[in-house]
Image 1 (cartoon, rainbow, N blue to C red):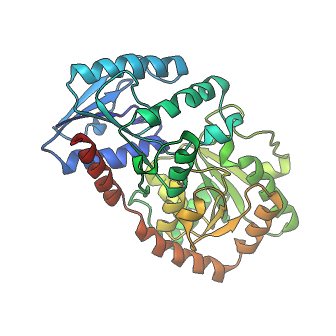
Image 2 (tube, rainbow, N blue to C red):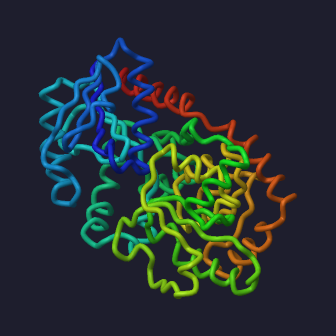
Length: 375
């Protein structure tokens, strides 16, 4: 069987959520099924490390699709032609985008539809494209995969898709995320947070990640507890110019807030494992892979209580109202220096992390692809 795959988010220098999802799932599909042929569709020059086996044919389709007009050209013209040229039996798209003009069977992954509920978070041109085409992609697909029961229900309700057509398959985290020894924690603190303990945020810096409330909550925490040494470490790159909203960081607070930009996976794992608390308070999330990364590291988590996060975190997380700065600040104070509480949630997180596995997720994706191919 010939399986075409949208791999345009496999980017060697800037892997974010869609890219890591594609990497973890598709790498396993290729390696576990050498009897099948895979055709990878990139939209620019690719890194050879993303060609996961001899059963992969990498293809670069122009134009590089990073604008709504180019989205349309890439999906409706370039992908459509390539599916025909390479005689694909099925097309798998981990970022949700499909070709509306092909008769090839298609399975996509719609991670979430935040743009439907919080359109202000996305630049107008992209927002208009997403809101016009994602309902069509959901209906066009033979089957839709999503990453949580929350997202499944949301897609079913918003797009009037029958629940039988959507399967929720949890994400997981890389095995590089593990606990570290105390000396390594101290070394990381010296490198990133002036040698002091730190609250950590990880993620593409986007309005829905809610830094516009996390940062003021941290500032409030510091004012109410001036003797506390905790810093705030922010790992990630801004996706849009308004990613921080209207937040103005005071000169005093700038001494305590540190921005790292993008980190390598290995360095990120060390930073995650060395954090005092992982603070993850988005107001909308389809899954939240960084939570699982923190669990695997034994790092206690303060998370928002909205959308999919309670489903992922279960009873292994301290929750707050992500829309309430006072509550975020209060929960930071609750957990910051309570070593017994942190140890309790560290152990709960390590135990819960066992529920998430890329191997199991890839197996479920494969089963869906096989079911669709036989229809």
